[in-house]
Image 1 (spheres, one colour):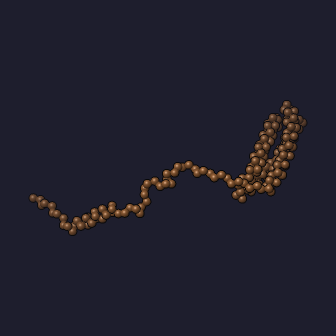
Image 2: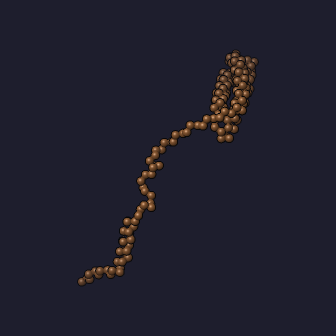
Image 3: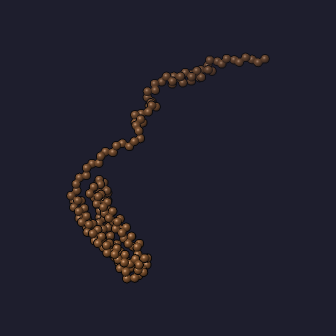
Length: 176
């Protein structure tokens, strides 16, 4: 016949009892030293970008204004010379449309287009000066200067129109 199980001695169960009591003591500890898991105020904000502050007013720069005026005068002269030469080049290109490549009319039109290219480079020099001024301001971490930005936009637009006009005239001639 099997024996009935013996009851464990009180000393054998002491470590289990102490461990249970210690784990229950941890449940009653003060939790105020730990951060809350509730959303913080910053987490309740949206993901929208903050409003950009208005830009600071740009101080007038008389030296830059004088330099821009000189460049504008040179640009206007170059553009006027280009426009006058473009009228002549258009007339010569129109005359050369039926001519063979290498003929006298074709050569006259090619020479007129080459003159336009030279005049375009005169205007491009002014554009390069404006771009250098803008680059120097950017390198010095200065804000955009509205008069300089307007001059750059106008110069780039004129340069693009001149290039387009030369390309159109060159495309109208027979290739040689």
